[in-house]
Every structure is written in C-alpha cells, then in structure tokens.
Length: 343
Image (cartoon, rainbow, N blue to C red; front, side, top):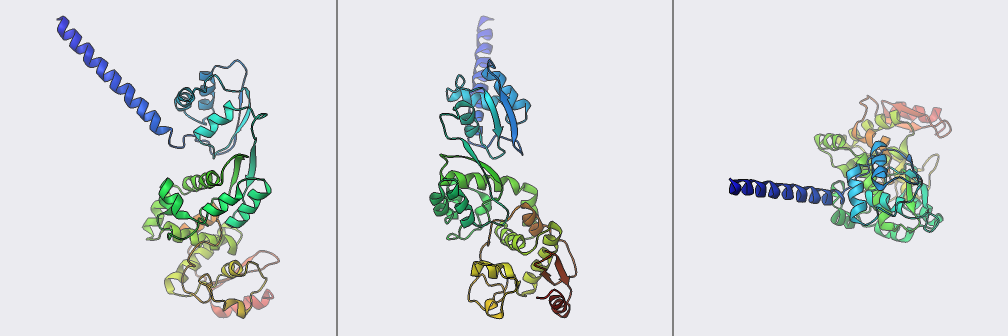
C-alpha cells in the first residue's frame, strides 16, 4: 500500500514538474513576441505604495498586457523592486521590454521619449530628415532602410518575402505616430515601423491578396501610387480599379505621381518631355507597375489597393485648386475635362 502511494505521489510530482517547466518555457517564448496589445495611447498611473503584483494587475485591467507575462518579465530581470510611481503614456507600438524599461527607469535621469509623426505618403528620405531634426539616429536608419534583405533574414517578416534582394524598405515603413527614446538606434526605429506594418496588414487582408493572385509587394507598390494620386478614400478605391484594369489590359498607368517621383518635384501639368524621361519608374513609357513603391502609403491607400471599387471609368484627372478628382470613361471625354479644368 505504501509502495503504491509513493509511486502515485512520484507520478503526480513528475507531472507537476513537467507542467511547471512547460509553463516556464511558454513564458520564455512569449517574451520573444510582442505582448502589448493596446491599439491607441493609454494613460496609466502607478501610485506610491502599490505592490509590483498590483501594478501588473493594473496593466491587465487597462487591457495593455497580460499580468502574468509582465510579472514574469519583471521577476526574471530582477526589476520587481525598481518600479517608479508616476503617470505614463503607453504607446501602441511599445513592446514588453520597452514597457518594463519605461516603468523602471527615472525619466529625470534618462532620456525622455519623443513623439514623432510620419504622415502618409512620406518617403524614407523625408522620414530620415525628421529623425535628424529630432537628433535621432537618422544615419543608421537611412543606411539600413536601403537593405530590405537584412530585415527579412534577421526578423523573418513574411511580408518582405517578395521584395527583390537589392530593393529598399520604401513602402513598408508604416506612417504613424511613434514614441521613441532619445537613445533608440536606427535599426530599432525601423523595426518598430515594420512591426506596425505587420499588425496593420491583418490576416484577412493577406488572405484576400493571395486570392487575387497578387503579391503583397505588388499591392504596396499600387498603394504608394494611390497615396500620391488622389486624396479621399473613395477616390483611391476608384482609381485602384482603373489602375488594376490598366495593368491587366497592358495599358500604361500614366501616373503623374511617378513623374513627380523621378523629377523630385510636383507640377500642375507635366510636359510631353517629362513623359518621355528614360526611367523604369516612368509609367507613361513602361507598361505595368513601377519596379518599387514610390513612398510609404497609409492604411487607406493599402485597403484601396486590395479592395478596389469597380467602376466604368478608365481615365481621371485632379483639379489642383479644388483637389477634386474628375473621372472619364473615354479618352475624348478625358481630354474635354482637361480643357474644362485648365490642364
């Protein structure tokens, strides 16, 4: 009887140890992933006298992060007694390690985070210039942004799979508002932006792109054109349908946005000579999509590229004064609209 009891006790003990180790390794694995789940900036107050477990529960109640993951990370890194009472703004781009750093390091003794906004349609160069103005690591940012393969190989972003080896990250540096530490490296800035892109391009969008027999890269190239061509989401969806049909029909896209990209300046009306510039990005001379994105598009432009609004138009133009998009079904109608709008 004692032998059976000892055997059962030993078996239970082995199971408990196995479960404990499994949970430990599960938590270890989770620490390598992005755990913070808020979708917008959240304000949170850590009061004096709160225990570290109460603080973890508070973050859980605010739906910022699972209390067990935060507690395990703080315990594992010997930070449970270093949490600083203060008011915090929790960015949606922050990860677990950054969150732990934020609440355990005195802002008065460490560099404060900077709020940086990159508008939709900005180029990587424009982003670098803004980083420079804020004394951030723009040199490393600009250098590494030229090498998409580096980030695909190191961080395994599946959306970079179809990007040609020598191409840049243009198109994938998601325009948004970010919070950066003064000490952040250019690589870390890029990773934050790519992580953001990875979240914004949700699973359903990826499934629908695949159903259309397109690559994510093709969609982002198209989105970068739409971002520059028209203003409203509705117009982006209509122009998306026009452009995709032109690609299918082997008809030039004739996107003025690509001429502006080549010339590094925008014009009210591009000349015939402009349309004859010898460049792979010239969609007046070349059939199909340009070889790479021309800017970093926002979510509306990406959605429009994936979900075009079917219509019977084949041409469009923009009134530079009103911003209105004028659509035409035929070339003759299009030319008449150009005259009416002084183009």
